[in-house]
Length: 304
Image (cartoon, rainbow, N blue to C red):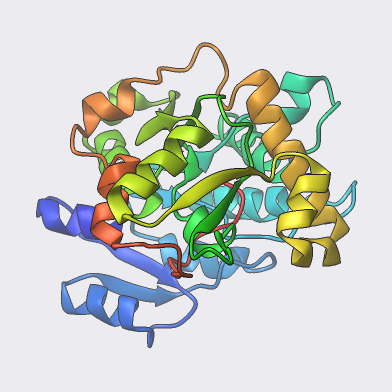
């Protein structure tokens, strides 16, 4: 996201980081960004406020946080601290990385806290005396490269487990390239976007289309395998079984997306393509990454 703002030449950028010594942060500093140490952990509101002071706008998000049993809501707690810090620092416009409230949309029948808690932070931001607007990133393409890897078969091909039924269309995105243009649109036009919640989508795909495109682009033989149900998820990814609450969240999340739709019915699903016509499709992402089924790390969250 910071790279997009820097490339525009219209913004001075301050990046919050756990360490200034990582190569990505050093690269941002070389390009003119100010890098400030402020780990995204609860209990650091004063540090967040100091890091944000003097900023006109702030893009805020929570890092990957492991789900905990109810009534714990660690992502909500951190998000509210970030919101309060932005207000205390005098930030005029916050863009928040949000998602839908699964509790509300399902009447509490499904549990996906990393969706719901982001939505609750959004609701909290709307009560504060500052401008706020919101983006909602689709499922990540990179999930399949980092967390839901294809499994080699004895015939040399791959079994490609997908956490979705074969023919349900679902939105996907590359967060590393799509977030920046979306956030910059909000900063460029704060009056137009204030109070709005907008999806960020690269392409809407079925699981079958996802695997077929992988085969066509990579040249690697692969077939779709279901990892949609709890049983199928654990059969393909038994390591997830070590964390029961993670399993419950993953199953709740994908069941929600299939049965209710990833986005609420009134969302403008075409906005991000209008805003960023060059946003990567799944095929674009595969060609750019050169992925052929091996593990690759992008440093983004599981689940979304």
